[in-house]
Amino acid sequence: MLDTSPLTAVVERFADRLRAAPQSRLQQGAAAVALELARELSGRAQLLEGPAAAPAGAPRQMPDEGIFVVGDQVAVAGLDLAEALRAAAAAPDGAKAPSGILDEAVRLVEEAEARALR
Image 1: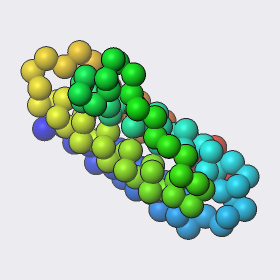
Image 2 (image 1 turned 180 degrees about the vertical axis):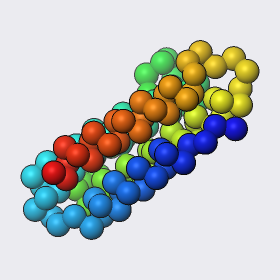
Image 3 (image 1 turned 45 degrees about the horizontal axis):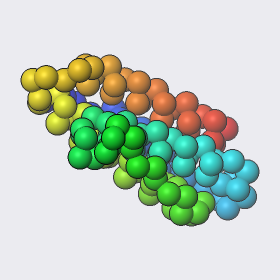
């Protein structure tokens, strides 16, 4: 089983910081960065989950529900990706090594957090 705790830890930390961020910080770009990240993580999860999750190879895009929910959107997308990675690691026919995708996702979250909350 793939240990996705590095991803869940950085996702939860960033989500918590977004939830605690003042409105002004969110409006100054943190929310936009977080939504972009949530959409990226969600898309990656859908592609890992296969055609049922991403019909015609195009993942559904996470909607913009406003600046006050981006922390929850990051958390949901990150945890969905962690679950998809665990499932992919258990499948014998994975195209790309889930551990490589995991490392890349952790890097994406860390970079987004640095840009959003600097």
